[in-house]
Length: 289
Ligand code: NGF
Image 1 (cartoon, rainbow, N blue to C red):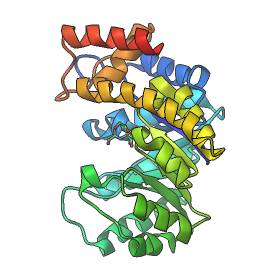
Image 2 (image 1 turned 90 degrees about the vertical axis):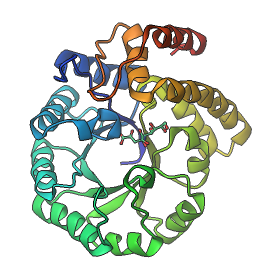
Image 3 (image 1 turned 45 degrees about the horizontal axis):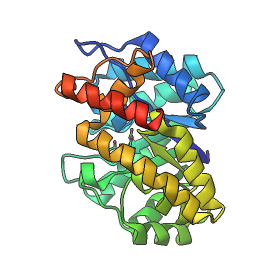
């Protein structure tokens, strides 16, 4: 399960329906152009939390159908409705997804016992491996090293998707659990994560910038830090502009300039205006995206 994963983007029409042919095109360019090792399906970048259950299942189905066994597939099934998580987890497992991942339950201030119950319930119902999706900035859930240890007591919890900038905690987790999988989540901090010993990474920008991410990761792992930083700096020039314009519509607009049917973002997320679309074209040409 080590490697670089794109957090798969999902194209929608103006009414919020999934564009199946566009989704297949995005998958193919991730494999053929970005050369990624796997896809993280129905995460934040897939606008998962804006979709209904039927749409989430549809995405799982299309992705597996398009990918087959070419690359590794992780299904994000987390939801605050545990029954939905279980239903999605069973569905993705039956489709043949390599592992599940679930965001820590959010909105209500769940106790750690409740969070643990949630993970163990999904694992028990599906029998699949689980990667904890920790993203404190969006969920408000900050798990401590002791809490990770308790979650890891279930051997089906194989690792963490670590989307945080706390490199002290990351170092502590790496040292304490050398055999657990750690996939880092912030593309703009890939070099720091690689040096900290992560096994790979999952990112939204790898949909358009996967090859630079690969160079950063490999160079950092080989100890060629200055060379890795050169590419991280260039990458962060791109990410800075993408974030300023609005991450998901901008990533889709970049794909659209390449003739991919990347569609719109799902409302209430807002589309880009004409001035922003012009800036996207400049970005694509300047960085050869
Ligand atoms: O989009 C977010 C939200 N984070 C992603 C990634 O960690 C999670 C990250 O790539 C993800 O994409 C998913 O679950 O689908 C950022 O977009 C990127 O580093 C720019 O900040 O924080």
